Amino acid sequence: MYFQHQFSSLNISCFIPEGILIFNLLLVLVIDLLSQKENKKILIMITSIGLLLSIATLLQQLDQEPTIAFLGNFKVNHFTTLFCLIIILCSALSIPLSLEYIECSGTRLTEFLIFMLFSTLAAMILCGANDLITIFIALESLGLGSYLLTGYMKQDIRSNEAAIKYLIIGGVSSSIFVYGLSWLYGLSGGNIELKNIANNFTSLDFSFNLISWIAYVFIIVGIGFKLSLVPFHRWSPDVYEGSPTPVVAFLSVVSKVAGLALTIQISETISPIIQEYGNILVQILAILSMVIGNVLAIVETSMKRMLAYSSISQAGYLLIGIAVGKENGYASLLVYIMFYLFMNLGAFFCIILFGLRTGTDQIRDYTGLWTKDPWLAASLSLCLLSLAGVPPLTGFFSKTFIFWSAWKSGLYHLTIIGIFTSIVSIYYYIRIVKALVVFKEKDISYYVKKYSGYQYSEYKYNFNYIFHNFIQFSINVCIVISSLIGIVIDPIIFFVKETILN
Image 1 (tube, one colour):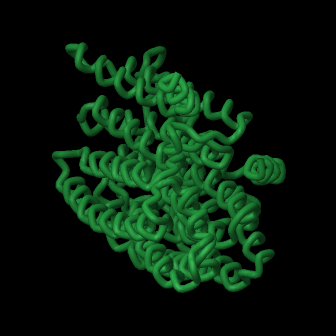
Image 2 (cartoon, one colour; image 1 turned 135 degrees about the vertical axis):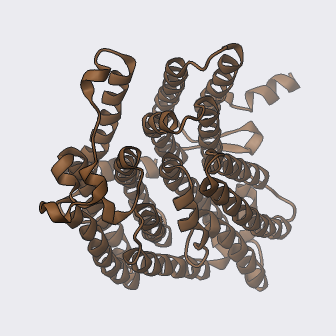
């Protein structure tokens, strides 16, 4: 009876989405081991089916009551489920472009899929982690998968350099983070579950305020490295530039979603004793990231480095939601990151296609792309303008919601700085759009003059033709959501608010 009770208390059904990914990962590995030749069609099909099944089970969890699983080590509620949905959607959308990139580079697909699935699994577990040990193991697993993906192109010196930089910075940030966790463990009297830590913090004397503040600072600094927040951002542009572009697109979303979910959990745990002081730290990091990220993006000449600084500034906007707090703040953060997923991936997908066809990622080399590929130029323009928050695109409405939440909570300085830095970001995004639509022959870049897209007749009625159509379909989905869905954002906001409150 004891073992039966222990087994029932595990609530394994809550772990089904993650269990599907584990099975999928092992299946891909076994198929590759048993096959004499890498069968990319089967691997892609199996991976895609696994991700879709996991998405289906996550959608079912939105109708279920919040549950604690694995004896308190893992929790499932509507909040964590939404974060996991964003993560797994990012993985599903990243696979088509990854295949094309890997085919052009001549590397193997199996290892790439395994690393991507492993990173996705770690990020999902991190979102639902409910104790200090699970948090640390999931965070390190996500880091390990990220390092392997960053250095996947072993023949590329820049990829190796990016992986080494990422590994060193990741090790330093993990050391700082785990030191902060050790302070939490000590302050809570030896508890590792977040709920028990929070309960013990309510009974702590005011004299422990400084100690709790120190623990929170170490933890936020450790997470700040992972999110590439200013002033912990120096590694990010170099890693973005040297890493394979599909990896950058994937990690730019997944690492942010997992890091923000972890920040919310830690903030909610420590907030009973540090109160508004912890919120001040989050606000400072948000302001620095918004200002410095956008200002440094202006002077960049590489598209990937520019998007790296843009990603830093976007992290600052997302921190506003954490500073605002429950309900409106968390709802605005979730809405913003949902749309950021499609805006960011759409921009990266366009950059990947252009890079594969020309071999460059310099902004000046995009000049005149409209004359050769209007669809790609228009797609990139819409995604970039949506990231900037230009009305009436989706990015404008999601930014408006997060700024409105800050204003309603009395954080007027965050709102004003956020609006000002968004105007700054419009400048460097418009600069790219202006270059894309140049029509004068003398201004068109050398790479665009040599540019040529796919010859569809070569791929008709075969797998490559079908798969290329799927790539275009994925990009079109990102374009539609980035540009049109904003006009019906109210039902989405209502759904997210209701989901969080339930």
